Amino acid sequence: MTLTHNEPAAKGRSLWDDARDRLLANRAAVASMIVLVVIALISVFGPILSSHHYDTVYRDYVKVPSSLEAYPRADQVEPGFMSAAKRARVTVESYQREGDKVVAMISSKREIDPRSVLYFDRSDLFKNAELADMSADKKSATLKADINFMHFYFGTDANGRDMMTRTFIAGRVSLTIGLLATIVAISIGVIYGATSGYLGGRVDQMMMRAVDILYSLPFIFFVIMLVVFFGRNFILMFIAVGAVEWLDMARIVRGQTLSIKRQEYVQAAEAMGVSDGGIVRRHIIPNTLGPVVVYMTLLVPKVILLESFLSFLGLGIQEPMTSWGVLISEGARNLQGAAWMLIFPSIFLTSTLFALNFIGDGLRDALDPKDR
Image (tube, rainbow, N blue to C red; front, side, top):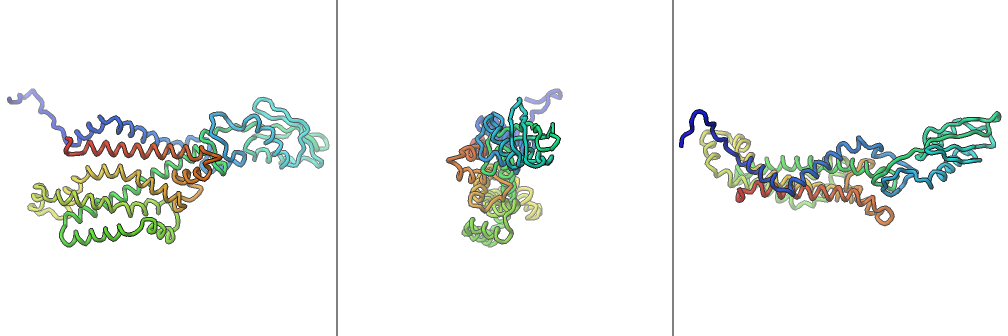
């Protein structure tokens, strides 16, 4: 059967098109991608939209439970007002709450300093405090203040900081470290493994023995050594983790390269005089991307867990910055009296790890040559 001039030629499908369709047909992988995107968006934009800053301390709201209702509660307003009046060294003669405002008659043995309203504004329970109807001797007046309602949907921590904002900002840190450390590990591992596998011979043996020596070094010892020399900081975390995790990637890529370099198109490139660097860059590395992509989705959760483990040991992120590992460590110490400090970071971390693992399984199935 021959094609006429009016019939368009059939468009061929690449293996990547088949892999994409197989991935999209995997419901668990698609659902996991949606969950991961949602968590990433919340981590990026959540702290911006939140009414609380991640390091703002509310001294009057230490370890308050998670709630959809606004704080302060009705039974907190009057004791909070009396406490502020005591700090301002004034006596409350009468107290009355009018909706979202508090009106009180105050007096003092000395003249009332107008700056005493600052004691009420500094309280987390009130705002816009002002004095009115000052007496002639300035020893009594009417004090009015608005009740400062705030929401803590995830509760607060042991320092009175909003757990929701801290959980979101921790997501930024954990996901960023996971992605950056994975990129470092993938970049080093792919280049190193492809070079070793393609060159072969003594060069391959020497490069792989170097990998074996690095494998023998304890990871925690390596991290502690870096912390001692460079101190704890955000950049050090993904460099330390990425500089160790590339070893597995190098071995995987080397194994793939040993089989790829025997293919006809590689031998044809060699016969045409293409340099070793050009062959590795144009033929070897692109054809190892399948296993690399799968390993990358599995490496990100591993890196996040490593960062969480290091932060749990106190070798990770420094205050006031935080990560899911730091929050879980704090929550574990306060589990009996403040379970919400552990529950919410754990939900985000667990959901992220499950999503990445399901995506990795989906990519493995989609890119498996035996299933095509």
